[in-house]
Image 1: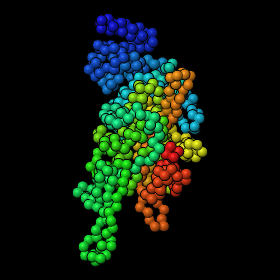
Image 2: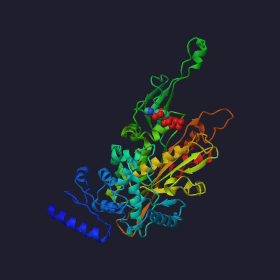
Image 3: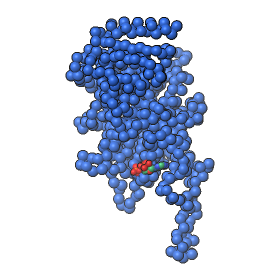
Image 4: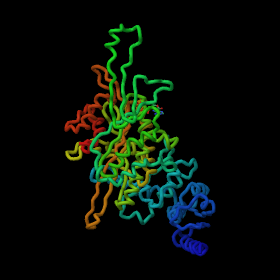
Length: 524
Ligand SMILES: Nc1ncnc2c1ncn2[C@@H]1O[C@H](COP(=O)(O)OP(=O)(O)OP(=O)(O)O)[C@@H](O)[C@H]1O
């Protein structure tokens, strides 16, 4: 039976190679697999595949047709001659002219809220974009070859009709981080509570409160903290006033100087040897659930310099265990969306934006602008700004929102944003930018048909804001913090106001404090 299926498939492919790819198209494929088209092929299948394609378009059609995506194919593709074209474009300049014509039509693609929304290459490729992403990590010519091929396919694809024009300028330079690959190959295990609690969606609708958790920094090796006792079970810490060294104070003065221990309670306490996985699993599950249930959520860390704020929020990409809040939140948000999609039949779409806030003037910069424009940040492009909305509170305007159909793509945009932030570190004058904050947002759009009357549709948008704040400065008497640095006291006041549901939020640095209270409407 398999032999018959394969023979039929070979015949079809030969016909296609004549009819669809024209004279030059010597497409074709074929191989020995006992698998049906719907099952993705494994590496061992690929090793038995012989691919004869003379143009990049054919390769993409091949991948699409046979659901073949994998590193093995990428290796095969590197050996394919790119000189011969079978895609209707006779020269590179023709492709470029088509590309620029296409890009002109992209102008003015804005949604009603004023955000620039772009369908990316991934958005219009119905099969998995894995191969494209894998290309990003390959050191061969395959990445640009593959992305060019994808661009051409998009130009000629009839399936693009009626869709937002696709983003064509997609190049995949190597980035300093590769969260994309680690989420693809080693996604963090989903915390058990995340999916178990999902059926109680209605109860947890909207978090309705702020959770404050404490992570104790590991400090320097050998450093002890005798003055601090943490009880992770009770989620509290007890601070003992350090005793002044003997001999410096008289016995009476020493008795006066030593005050009673102070106890502070939190929603959770993570001691100094807590792993990233423990911190992430224990801190963001509720927020991710609330976002999938339709509420806005926000996670950020604040504290003094070099205590591990960025390490907690972003982490490292060298292993699954060292992933921070941002990559874990991406992985778990998509996991929960998949579960919800299967269980309720709701439709979801995820978009991503990344914005940096820096300097005394509180400049806002789009960290994903390079993906949209295909090059460095255009200083003439309309900038991002914050707008106060009487109903929805403070809203970011004009930032790029890029479609992320899979966690790998969302993580890829995180890599892009971190790379842009690193690039921006040195200002035009060669000075190092200090006190920069990054706001990475995942927008979840969902809708569902009413079971009773199919005509009724419900849904909306919720946002997960993940903020990497830079250091808080210790307050200096009579001196405002430099740049956009925070003081613990001012941010503490903002958080306290949010927790208490205060109508007035004590903004001291309008943009920065607004960023931290972007979800204030939700909390109140
Ligand atoms: N829990 C931890 N385990 C291992 N390494 C850590 C931990 N916390 C922090 N580090 C390391 O300490 C260094 C400083 O951390 P990080 O840059 O995250 O601090 P920060 O508070 O964000 O600093 P800044 O105030 O400059 O923004 C980094 O090299 C980081 O890898």
